[in-house]
Image (tube, rainbow, N blue to C red; front, top):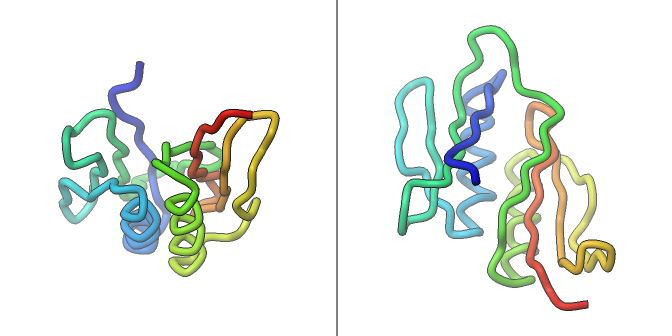
Length: 122
């Protein structure tokens, strides 16, 4: 359904470091970078992807992005890396019965709600 999403960052380097750290735990790599853009995708293909751009005017805030994790350990690693890279805790890793998923939520440097989710049976 989605080809790519884009976020505009107030502090490009801080946001880039955040996304490199937490997405790396989910086997999502930085595939492309200029001084103003960093693109993230899985090694086996460049779509879907996340584009992080230096904000010229408006900064992206309040967006919720959820990234698929292969298992609970990856969700835990995502959470730890995100917090260590400057993310703020929204919800610590736990099983959410209403979603049938093990999830963790952090707030990125610009206030976006970033999630790692591993779908499970109820």
